[in-house]
Image (cartoon, rainbow, N blue to C red; front, side):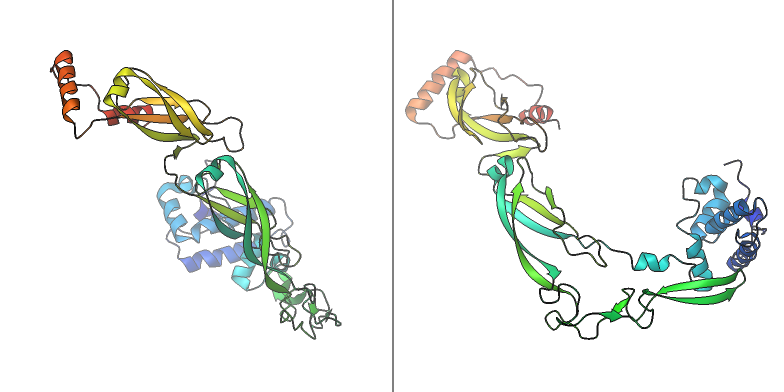
Length: 369
């Protein structure tokens, strides 16, 4: 920033200059150094320097930052702060120097649409095709989008002679400037409609119901968006249509939960099963699978079924199914069960031992917090 001159020096102002002083100085210097007026060497660079200084000092927040921290206070901000030469002329003198009409009447892309679709848990896992229904504007069948009654044609705008713009010449301190604006009669289209289409009221579009069959890919989750390119609202002045965004809402499952590409399921076993070990049939999204519960399994143990989770969206492979084992303690015992547990207690001993971590702590560690 050391090569930059002080902005107040650039505009030939004192630091206590008012906003009006800054504006007057800018007008005077812009007139003096504008490249179309001043052809001397260095005039264009001087003009850019003047614009940069004015862009900072004319904005109170940026001026305060500059006064406090110098060039470092506005470092990283665009040097023109969003101003183009045409914007500066229009701000001060009420007209442009060309190009603004082209922006206003240029082809514009149509708005996007959103549709919420609810699918089942397994459908989100494996994908599904869904028929959707939505409404959007389409070209009128009667006039084909021309807005004119069938049998008639649009006529050339008499105000702009079909150009879509109106030009006025104004004398300014920089010389003759051409003010170009969108034609108010035809709104920049160059044509007017003598007899509007009765079917659409001259709009050129009608709202219609649309049906589409949409492939929803495997692995989508709640909140995933599927984009259908070009299925949104039509563009204007020949612009492309917008897109349709389908927002997926996956229903909850009776047993399964998702954690990214993994599927979680809780499994309750009794004390004897946990101590002795056994083989159990456990549900997965692919159907029932055998799972070995090892002897001595503790409550909070997590067992893994490889590649039984969710297919990775737009990638190869699948997640896993995680089985969270909980050892259930019976709350009511029959006389025979109580006798057996008493014998087991005598055999195991009655000493209680402290543990380092709780079940929840261990589960949090395994699941990454």
